[in-house]
Amino acid sequence: MEKEFFETDVVIIGAGPVGLFAVFELGLLDMKCHVIDILDKPGGQCAELYPEKPIYDIPGMPSVLGMELVDSLMKQIEPFNPSFHLSSMVQEIKKIDDVFWEVKTDNNEVFKAKAVVIAGGGGSFLPKKPPIKEIENFENNSVFYSIKNKERFRDKDLVIVGGGDSALDWALNLESIAKRVTLVHRRDQFRAAPDSVKKIFSLIEDNKIDFVIGQVSSLNGKDGILESLKCKTSDEEVEVKCDALLPFFGLTMKLGPIANWGLNLNENLITVDTEKFETNEKGIFAIGDINTYPGKLKLILCGFHEAALMSQQAYKYVYPGEKLTFQYTTSSSDLKKKLGVS
Amino acid sequence: MTKINFIEFNGVEHSVDVDDGNTVMEAAIKNNVPGIDADCGGATACATCHVYVDPAWAEKTGEAEEMEKDMLDFAFDVEDNSRLSCCIKVSSELDGLTVRLPEKQF
Ligand SMILES: Cc1cc2nc3c(=O)[nH]c(=O)nc-3n(C[C@H](O)[C@H](O)[C@H](O)COP(=O)(O)OP(=O)(O)OC[C@H]3O[C@@H](n4cnc5c(N)ncnc54)[C@H](O)[C@@H]3O)c2cc1C
Ligand code: FES
Image 1 (cartoon, rainbow over the protein chains, first blue to last red):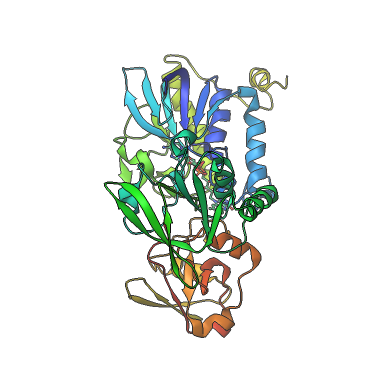
Image 2: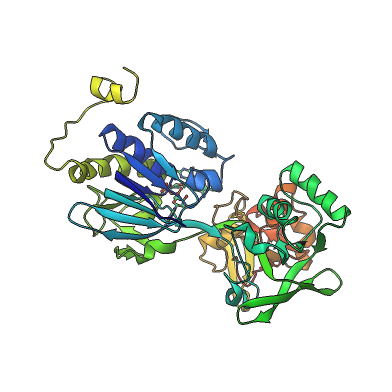
């Protein structure tokens, strides 16, 4: 894949509520942002874990659903027109010179920025790996938790495991390319878009895909290449030919690459000061659930406060030597202009 | 206070006391019982609080609701007695409840 280059004032890692609000606070101070998240949508935990649950402790909002909060934040930051890079995981942060940082993703994106804000929450949302014996020996050759290139599955025997949208979407998508798709799920009900469920049942009926009710119990192959696997059903164990296994059990949060960036950590959290929320590296900030300091609470409102104070210091890196005057959005004609409400 | 017993995959037992109204997941987390991740904090959205209910208690804990059954699809090694522990409310009825933990929550 070709590398893509971007230059901006600030790169924000994590599009959770705190990363989103950081766009606003930085924007008020004229800093342009690019926001990167491994999820395919903004909102972090609010969007992935509890979109339909009410939150009761956002100041001024007696009750707001996780997804409503995300939608409102997206609306609030619209005037600043941030660029989003979703389904991308930040792998590396490197200092280039006295001014710039370089941030690289697993999608071959390279960013050059004067400040980096880590709003990584509980870490990257990554696919759950089912505890099947020796599964890690086959990862990347024969076991895949996400799919970037469908072509590699052409004319292969595929086993797709799971009963949610990802499992069904890929079964539908790969059925015509693969030699044979076997769908393995623990029951004959699916928790997915009704349309996909209908299509899957008709493919099963037409004998276009195989369906096994059960779970994968063991893998068989050598040198990292799968040949077959066994599925445990309610009354027997069946062997299924398999070149590639695609398990879809949803996502879980793992700290991920953040651990390798040379930042001071305390129990997997980045230590920061409480004036600027800066890490041990000048110009790299950490806000929201990912940071720790005496008295830290993992609350959205605390992350919002951190975003505001962080922005004051980030300004000094983006506009060195320039003086910052404190202003209210209510009354400053300057700020109102930026928000498009003057 | 109600007593709940957790048996880790490796056989280690933990017996904890918890106020009624908590969930079995909360009983584990509040008492630092290892083996329950509970990523979503009890929102029935992560399936990382999976437990096996001792068959003797199956009747008292009742049947999983539809949403919990759906979410169990995202747990591994699901058996007939699998439940999400954040969906089991503790009451005096369940005093002495025993649940086993899976090898891993993922
Ligand atoms: C069920 C539940 C209920 C909650 N209820 C409340 C409540 O009532 N009130 C309250 O204040 N808080 C509540 N919280 C906590 C609140 O959701 C968190 O405090 C908040 O989400 C933290 O926001 P964040 O932006 O710091 O991180 P997150 O929301 O965790 O977002 C971080 C994002 O960063 C991404 N990321 C991490 N590393 C990388 C990387 N290397 N590359 C790319 N992307 C990366 C992740 O994929 C994720 O999307 C609740 C949490 C849960 C789970
Ligand atoms: S804690 Fe997430 S489903 Fe129970």
